[in-house]
Length: 514
Ligand code: HXC
Image (cartoon, rainbow, N blue to C red; front, side):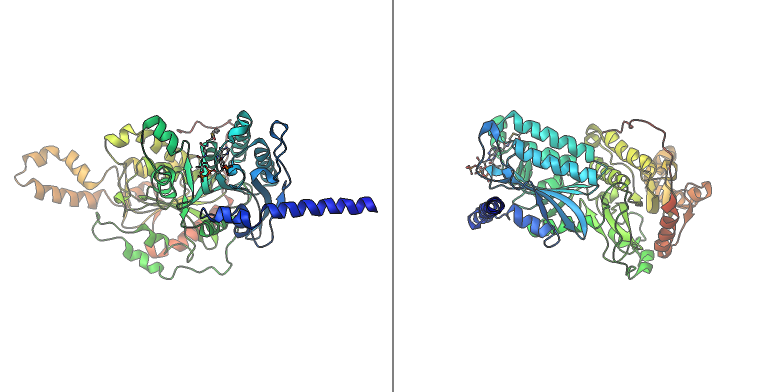
């Protein structure tokens, strides 16, 4: 009886010690840096009271020196988000700068293995100075173990990283191996080598923000897909994203609200395309009039804005949308937009999310910068991604579909399941201007009024070549459809495609152009 009572005394003491470890002083230290604590973050992320911690009492025993503090700087466990099981770990900057020692790494590896085995998504809340310097090679090995799990879980369970403080050195590569990266402005920073090393090696002065802040990574490097002003909205953003994702690669994405609200003005679609073929318009006017009301959720909003990637629902079914944005650089395909779209297509294909392509693309961006930067290599990524994707794939050509870009954007020959075009579509090898210059070079040179002749020839080319009816007559598109009926056509087409099955020949894996 006495022994049993003692056992409970010890149990209560340990719990009290853990509670005190995360007391007021602890909170103040983190709040003074404008950040929430790891526990506060977990409370916002998970459904109320659902988080269950694992390994709370693990201590670092590096070199035989047992740490006083519990947890080794990371909180691991699982709970519910929107009523579904999710695993997570949250690094604790108050313990040795959230740095990764061996016990810390083993805790993360344990939840990574559990998440994969049980088929639930995993979320990493990062706030870390990278490899724990004192533990040397042991901490580097820890990173190796985490990276390996990221790779093994890729395409099996969704993996999401949230950068809420520094992510320095090794701390950046696990996020880079996950599916999506969220960052909070001003407090979240990612860099392989920090400003001090930049100064030492290159003698350049640069701030944390300019080197690896949320705006840099969401608009310039393309490393982060989602950026928010504060931690709470960042974590709520993660909850929102999860509403579009299945728990694993053998499930379907969750249904949304059963009360599907159709867009208010589908007839507006008839009016979106401007009379002038060269005038821009906003592709979001089309997207928002096709999908269920307020269901569009953009991915990588600030990066390569000439290409839109977003999730949405149509008749309550989650789809991924890849769309050219005529309003930015005329919707041209370049290095960044090709990579952005390719990665999104790969994610959707891995997680059973059907794809809708909305196409208005004048071609690939010409020039030295793009060619020397490897436009061929990066453009090929998008070709490969669409060609290999076996989920339902539908294309609607709204206006321009020229040359190689027409082929890339899920054309019929690349495996499009349904390829529709609006009457405003222009499908040809190249735009009227370029075609006329090449085809009528001699006539234009000999003409007394070359401008007038060019105008006439461009008009002829538009009427005879740059329209949807030639492609329609060859069967390269399945049908020219009325914009106002596009939503219903898509609902019907996605419904038929629910039974889509594709045979795959056995191979280890293809060699995609990386
Ligand atoms: C051990 C660390 C640490 C680390 C920070 N700390 N980083 N301890 N290992 N990597 C400790 C500090 O000593 C300090 O301890 C506490 O955390 C808070 O750090 P501060 O510097 O006071 O905080 P702040 O001013 O906010 O700066 C945060 C920081 C900075 C930007 C992260 O600490 C920093 O630059 N750290 C080093 C980052 C780095 O270069 N990491 C790369 C490691 S190599 P006290 O006791 O004073 O509170 C690597 C390679 C792995 O990761 C490769 C794998 C492929």
